[in-house]
Image (cartoon, rainbow, N blue to C red):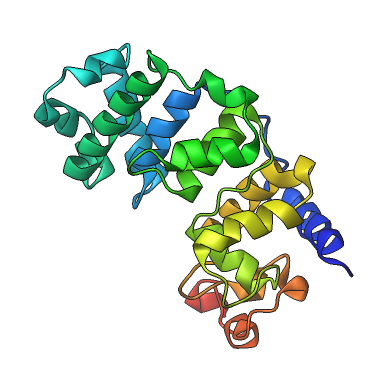
Length: 232
């Protein structure tokens, strides 16, 4: 089975388990950028409310440019690392305004994927995952954002080399996952990582893609019962 056939098979199983991901309504690239910065090193449960509070308080985004950092920090305190993220967000928006004349990233639509990624990564505090999220969720460009779940699972599944670094994984996965499936694959792999293929104590015994997995410890974890003790 070649790598793309394996990816399609994995996706069929994950769609069966979790349902096919709903089409994502395109969002403003600036909104996606800020929301993804807030999501760094925390969960959606913390970052999404912080984003909503920030956007409600600083609308339009230009208001952040003249806002006190303490006010920005207070607005996003639930996202964690608020001091760092407040400084980062203000710096990013200031630089976009300097380059574009207004806070917009619409120019990326006409750029190639490579040039778009380089533009975004040139903004201080924007890494490969954040840049890829903007292109995928705002412009529908076939780029694979790689978070910890995707990095862990694609290694366990044998889709990428065990020695590959996360920075390199973005490029490799973007090239091997069929372009029209990147959006679904990204969301389904994350869901599987959250529910079943956890970093610690993965639930191999109930994993729907167990037979496609190359994880060295899968047999060990398959024998662990995940049912209540009275049923084991």
